Image (tube, rainbow, N blue to C red; front, side):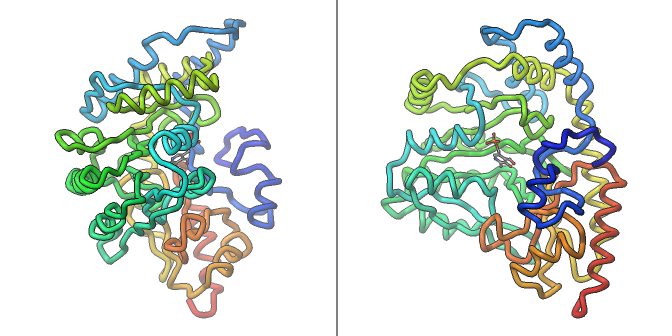
Length: 387
Ligand SMILES: Cc1ncc(COP(=O)(O)O)c(C=O)c1O
């Protein structure tokens, strides 16, 4: 796709997965959240240089790796991570699983805000916790949080944690400071630990600004940990590790102990080279990608046929498209997208029942790919009798 030389095993476009999930390989695969664009040349060069050293043994992690994250956050978002702990973790999934172990007990409820990233619910279920469902509210103005509902669930004595997604995958909200301060207040008052997944923090559109949960929580007595890393911003999910940022000493020492017990923190030499270079030299490339994503949002806004419409994203490179006007039920839409529109998108129900009738499309792609996707949707919609 996109003229990229993807390996046939690239997740998202490998034939076996397409066949298994969509029943065909004759689809344009736009369902995985990563950039399908040539990545930052500085990062590619750093990886090539690192490979050229011919030494892949143990390495101590230079402080420059974490330092590059701290100064990126300061430059890009005006966030001084300060003396908060920045703990290395192999993946966000690892961090969430470990944090649930550390701050909750079996049988307790963890608040989610569906429609939301598909991994959260299985992580909660596999930890033998239950989901406290605080569905997002959709009206003509877009998605908002149901803060009254949040307060009600948070007040339940068995609710002990919340997984917040900011910016929110898949609906593209970048939660504002007022909303986040309310979340911090509600969770603080009810002793609910906030796991703030901020992996899409850098993917901002229009005049959106990212508010770290750390800033919203400032001055509020709430326990939290925020999850970060370069994997989404720079397309490094196959290489880089991630970070847990927290001011909670118990959680920091608890995670460090778990990491030491399970040997989670082996330093990957490529991860370290890619992370440092991305944060130190990748800003121009990221600005270019964000312009491309904004152009793709405009193309979808103009080009999608009635009654299909785009929920305007404030952030992420994910387009949340409303197909409800076609009158297809959940299995029908899931079948129609690959078979009629010849698109492999993530059908909305994957993100919770609140996503029924929607689908998520990755739009960090070149204009010709977006144009092709729009053409395919137009052709398919013109053949739906009721549309
Ligand atoms: C919000 C969010 N969190 C976490 C992840 C996955 O992170 P990891 O692969 O490090 O577990 C994704 C991937 O799409 C995501 O969108």
